[in-house]
Image (tube, rainbow, N blue to C red; front, side, top):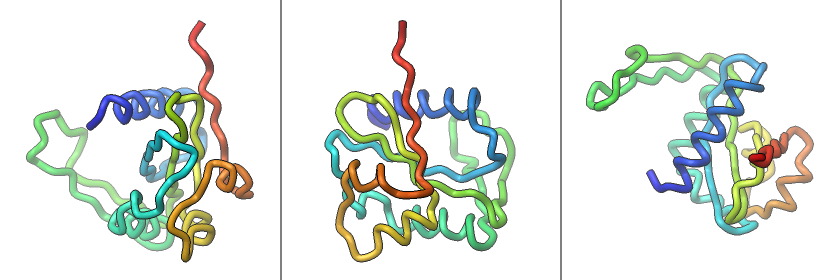
Length: 133
């Protein structure tokens, strides 16, 4: 994992722990250094898994190969919330939490989306990261 992705993961973890009140959910975090996100950067298997978690039942076994201690063996998402989370720009100032159903609808037939476009989506939430004092 790259340094920028690690920072984003950490910031998102703090957000979820402090502010997320919508129950269990699946998230795929993406970071782009520009104001444009290329749709193929959400891999087909990621999009399929998020969609499956939202529409049906997704079972996932956590790998035993991990060096880290794992919390448990597996988990199931059944008609759960599922989101693509994108941070645009070189500086991490905020991120968009996009429901997978809206992502699927709005990106169909496109090769990329801009931050401006995403900011107009009805069900997408923008989270501003507070500046350190």
